[in-house]
Image 1: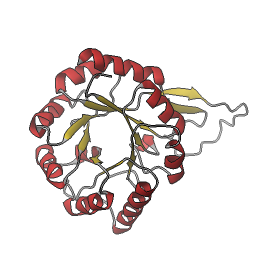
Image 2: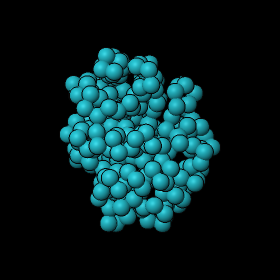
Image 3: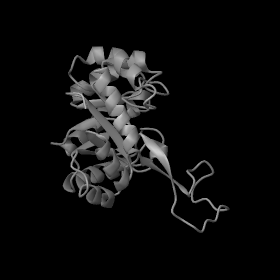
Length: 251
């Protein structure tokens, strides 16, 4: 990996975490429900995964899918999840919250950051759903977040590249801007050269066929748009190594 450069891989299993580390990831974002953008993982997953990897593990604190406007009960869940994840080995946390009018919920974020101390905290892609990226970034700097994960307020980091570049210029090293969203070996070089980013976030997954021999294809465990039961998505060592090589050559 290029000096000073870091690849964060989002994972939802021990197998993906091990593969990500083998491929050269410098940090993991641990989630469940990646099809929903990532939710809080189980405590059991964190505890077992920490036995198998040495790189830092940042845990997602997000109690449900959908928007980032949280009820009092959901905030209770987030506070308890922060307490438990800190206690059981999280190296950092990933969270975010907005008000109903698309501003950072500064009061709630201050509360959650206080609960997270002394762990570093990333503000997740709730940033991309906020009203004003310039003002939002200044708020996150003032609150004390270490980094922001963003697609540049667009459908992917490549499409949001102009905004990502402006955010990195605005940040001036006060906070890390980490591009994420649709990053692959096909577009990474353009994103790095166009933004000046020193970290990026990806899933780098491939499909893996289920080991099940008996298969009932008439039944689905989730909603009609859920992932198929007999195909798994797992972080791909070779993809992550390729991304590392691209980053090294680009920088």
